[in-house]
Amino acid sequence: MTVAETLAAHTAEVPDFPKAGVLFKDFNPLFAAPAAFAEVLEDIAGRWRGQVDVVAGVEARGFILGAPLAQRMDIGFVPIRKVGKLPGETVSCEYDLEYGSAVVEVAADAFADAHRVLLVDDVLATGGTAAAACELIERAGGRIAGIEMLLELRFLAGRDKLDGYVVNAIQVD
Image (cartoon, rainbow, N blue to C red; front, top):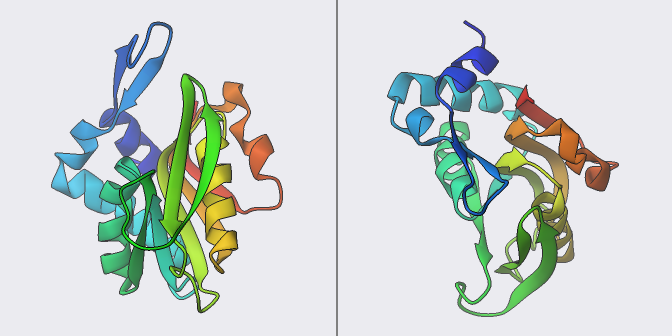
């Protein structure tokens, strides 16, 4: 079984969540299956080991992916949080997503040493979250080495907002 097949076998679809018309991709079955989750993490780590200094993950499922991925790669992890959740000076960015808008922020000094950053999150949909996260990372001094997603919803054309970045998705719908 390929990593994409493993991921597909451990992803549930929830219609009309969080609002009518949205088909939510639920990765809780993946997170609950240690061997499958380890396989996905190792697939990502294998692409980036030695090429990045830090992993950044977007709240909340990017945390679930990013922290164990960083530990597996023996590098640090930086959380990109919803507004108002980080102490100290922050950099923030407002963006649109397929069912509303949001604001994310990161500690202003999170990437002060011009770290090579691997950005991880669960789904590339409209690209708004990833583009905002890239902007935050760069404004805080980091350099985007690449972006990793579990799943890309190609019909929403989110990759178009990430022109110039290396983007990988394990599964593409």
